[in-house]
Every structure is written in structure tokens, then in C-alpha cells.
Amino acid sequence: MNPHSNPHGPADGLPNLPAGGSPLHPEQTSSHSVAGRSPLRRAGVGIVAVALLAAGGLTACKDGLPGYGALPGASASTGASTGVNPSASAGLGSPSASAAPVGSASPSGSASPTPTKSTSTPPPSGSPTYTVDGFPAAHNTGYPQGLAGDTRKKVTLTPYTGPMTITVAGTVIDGKDINGHLEIKAKNVTIRNSRIRVANVQAVTSTDDSANLRIEDTEIDGQGKDASTGGIALIGRTGYTLLRVNAHGSGDILRIDGTGTVQDSWLHDPKGTGSAQHNDVIQSTNAKYIRILHNRLENQHTQTSCILLKADIGPISDVVVDSNLMNGGGYSFYWYDANYKITNGKVTNNKFMRSPTGGYWPKGGYYGTHAFSASTLPTWSNNTWNDNGQQLK
Image 1 (cartoon, helix red, strand yellow):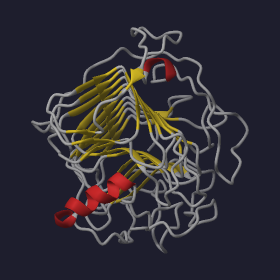
Image 2: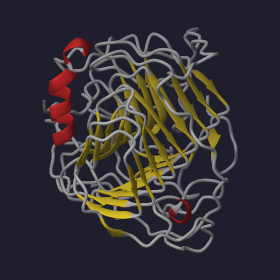
Image 3: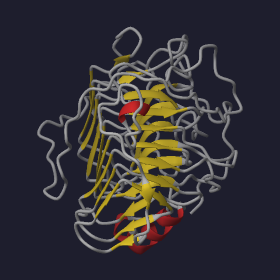
């Protein structure tokens, strides 16, 4: 499936933003029915989805997203309330097969390189700041390298010579330099203190909701060699927990279609070799349990997202997006119905960056911080600008 046939650019499907670029309001929903072009349905994903995901070929249909070739009548919320109340989502539960995330010390900043921009539109003045107090950075994500401020024990990697398809339950891969795609076909696998490098292929694939895969203190690098049109997610698709992961350098970074938790991680610099690629840091098209907790999510492009939740190939529910730092994309955060509905979510305590105070764009994302088009909206509270703490409504 290749839903990304139209080249992106700042003129493609621009939404009608209010004067001055006011923050979007979570209580407005588009009257236009948004439907992606994906022919897949939840019952039929199975083998097709696995094959496509492993090859990087399955990606969310972006049709109808504001700032992304929007369909006529589709728009981002603009600040005028329509009286639609966000859904109550108290008591969101954890699936029994999903491991609870492990707490980690709040990170302090450290210097890290400025990414290469691959957008045709130059950013406004003021380079993004890549050390942000209180959020993940180079020194406290990825494998411990002894960087200043890293309290973890330094690791010296050794070459990985084991199987690339993991079939033994409880396998632990620790302190390894891994080149190539890992296929997880066993439960309770752990990858930690390691580095995974790939070129134009997914780095880690798990297709069992109850796999209980854990990836901790690991760097995952796509090396900017993703040649796909849609974007290859470095990690997908379900049954995993990520802790203190530093992932970068592919068209998409992370996909959650099923169940997934990502915490205390730095996911950044989605990029590939083609100019028509559409980039997301975290993407979901059908899921029953998502936890995105205290991460730093950065997309240097003028299109798509830091987080895209769009129910293309199945419903999305039981979502918590809390205490993250988001920077860039077309809109940094999308919450969208499509062929199915997205429901039962909390979006709380997140911070959004903007230029000239460290972010890529003056409005957070190129067009704004968030865009909603759904019949049921998430609970939205205490989401603010990072620079001054002003509430985003």
C-alpha cells in the first residue's frame, strides 16, 4: 500500500489558521468525515500487516490531515468551542500481558548534535535546543557511553553473533553491537545496553500483543538510509516496552499497532533518502493499549507529526500521552478518526517547543501544536508551551 503519492510541502492542504496562529482548541471537531484510503480492516491485517511492517511498507494513510493535503472541509480545531466534551478516561487499565514501566531518574540536559534539516522550507531564526532540562537526552538514553552526566555504568559493546530471529523465550541480548533486523518470535525477550543499526529496513519487529518484549538503554539507528516512500518505522508493531531508548534516522521511528509503552526515551530525526517521504516519530493506526510517558519527541520536518494517532486499519483506545516534550512536525500531535474510531484517551502534562526559544517552528509544529478530528476527544489538561508555561487550549 502506498498512500503517499502526493509530494509534501508548506503549500499542500494548508488549514485555515486563525490570525496570529492561536493554539488549537481540543473541544472542536471537524464536521467533515475523515476517511483514509487504506483497504485493510482489523480482521484482515494479520499476515499482510506483518509482511508490510517488516519491509516498512505499511504506513498510515495521511489523507484528510490538516497541513497534509487536507480534504475540502477538513480542518484542525481553531479555538472556537462546539460544545463537544472530551471523553472521560479515568481508570484506563493495563493489559495483563504488558509489563509496567520502570521508573528512572529525571534526566538533566547534556549537549547533543543539531540534526540536519531535510525540509524545503527553512526554519525560522533560532536553532533548536537539543538539551532540555528534565527531559531525555544523549547522556541518559541509548547505551551508556560514559558521557558527562550519565550515572549509568559505561558499556563496551561487542559484536552480536546470535540469531536475527529470536525464538527462545526469555532471551537476553546485553551489551551487543547489532547490525540488521531482529525478528522477535518469542515471549519475554530483553534487549539492553546495546546498539542496533539498520539500512532501509525495520530494526525490531514484534507481532504478538503479549510478547512482553523489553528494549532498555539501547540506541537504534536507521542511518538515514530509508528509501521507502511511506517511511519505515524502526520499531514495531506491538507487545513491547521501551525504556531510555535513543532511536533516530528512519522515515518513521516507532509504530504501535496493538499494545505498546514507551517511556523516558529520545526519539528524533526521522529521515530517509526520498523527498516525498512523510515522517512520524510515533504512529498508530489501530491499538488497544498505548502509553507514551515522559519522552522527548522531535521531528524537524514541516509535515506530519511527533505523534500521529489515526484509526485507519482498526479502532484505537486506552491511550495515555503524559509528560512528553514535543517539537516540530506539521502538527506535533494528531488525534483522528478514519475508517474506525479513536476513543478513551488522556493527553496531559505535555510541553511543546517553539522557536525562537529552542523549537523548530513558531507554532510548535509548522502549522500548530495539535489537530483533532474525532467524534470522541481525549481528556486534555495541563498541556503548555515549554518556554513560559502558558496553557494550550
